Length: 265
Image (tube, helix red, strand yellow):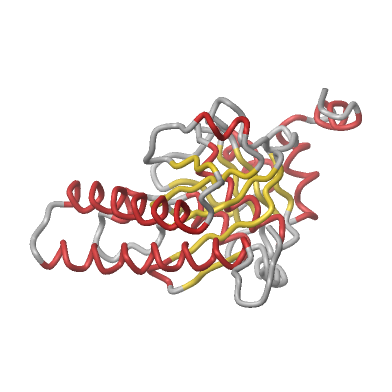
């Protein structure tokens, strides 16, 4: 979009909406827990409230754009529209439904002609937001051994291979956004997921991580493709640039170089 004085850029809009949806979620969770609501109801209401907020805001502020949301029906108009917002209104719903957990997020990303051009990930319970403009400044590595972050309940096969090959220490968190932002914050060095995901799980985290200067790809090193017809995008990798080759070597050996050199065709 063209930017004039007083008009939000797409990156500013993504950041503001991610923050405001997060504030809505914090208030809703606090109120529902105070009223004695069961966790499943807190989770369901959170998903729906954040989805409705983001859809209403995007419809009002970017009416010509399409939206792909985890909580909404797939609007196939996105396949013929240049601008598509890819949102996860509440990433880490399970963690949101647990008192005191901070590892849940709101994802807002814009895809234009197949490329992510603006994005934000908010971690509302930590009062933090990360966006593509201004991009986060990547801290220096903090640990002697690489720290590899995985999901709370399972260690993906790819993560086990990398952890053994590189002698990693394991860290566990909930949402994909929280895990990717842990790498941005240098609280971890590698995040690998191979257990199944959708475009909304990784779109905003991948854009923010890439803006911060991290390596971002699928676990075979190939690019992540967004606004594909199939919303399924099953694996995701974020790591420090200096660890990308060791990670891919651990997983694939020379095969990933051959595919890379052939342009992933």
